[in-house]
Length: 177
Image (cartoon, rainbow, N blue to C red; front, side, top):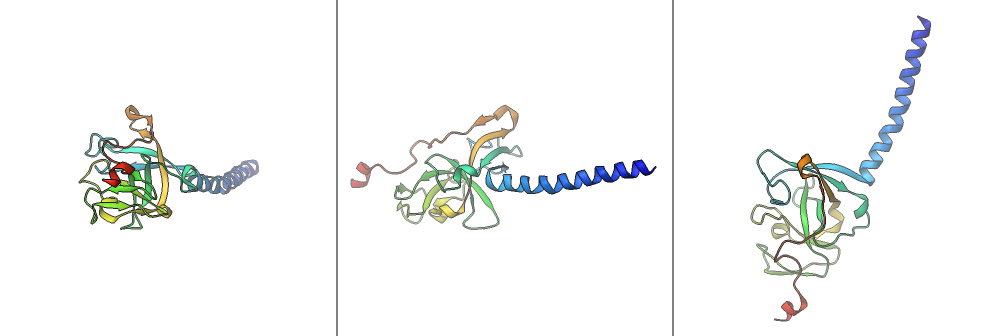
């Protein structure tokens, strides 16, 4: 009986010490490297959640790749919502600092993206709360870059940066016209 109690204590001690190692390692990993996020809503259709309804894509958000706030046009990123700091939104980067953007519904028809900001939009125009609603977004709100669709299994794929047709910064030739 005493042997069972000793074995039980050893097992409990091993579990507790493993727990106190695993929790900080997991928290550090999720804070610094990557985590999984469920994409809800229709703002990124047809690329994400193409079927709509209750079926949601799940993406892997790479936090390590944005640690220096480096993104490129066409990246799908997670940012803290400028309207509601308790919410994170997933949108596509359309323009970077210094770019001139032709907006879709913003108060100004053309916008120069200020230093330290970028322009984000949902792929489903008119069904997205994005820079056309709140303007350029500070890079300080950047949370992660979507690198892979990991759920549902039939949609497993790596996400590459690509801009939708007719979106992106204006060419310098267009600016002069």
